Length: 162
Image 1 (cartoon, rainbow, N blue to C red):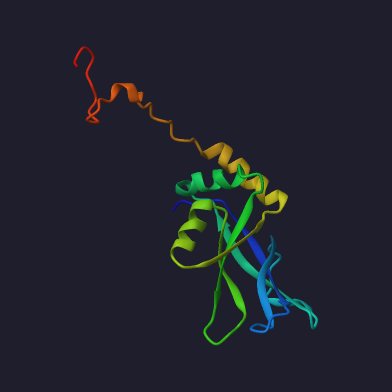
Image 2 (spheres, rainbow, N blue to C red):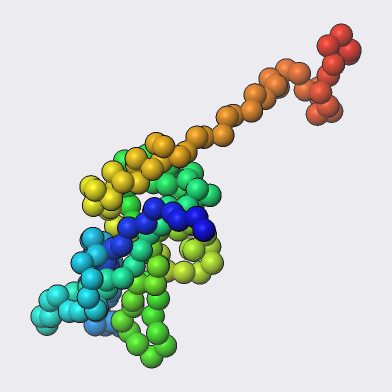
């Protein structure tokens, strides 16, 4: 059985009061931090704001997602992407899964998931960067023939033919 490097994390979601005639508040991804264990819990509860911590998520680095990690680490602001779901009849979302791969997050969004991002903490970004450095090699670009070798019919002309 192959094991892949992984790191546990916890997600902080915040509910903020808003001045809007259709909604009283909105939820957003506030931060992702190292997981210290425990159960989901409230960190702050005021009339203006509610912050909830959801431990127990894990990001794993898979070789087939290497390009997605590379795109993330080379973006200038490495991020954690969190898929948020909401139970029917509830107005509070919960974190369903997390990834460090741009490509995986994009597939989730294409599949209809609600995905938010937040900057990765420095040690998490460094861990991902070291893995990418050791495991990712971009595919070599294939040389394309210059357009001058293509005739008006779109067919490649052989040397000496007209």
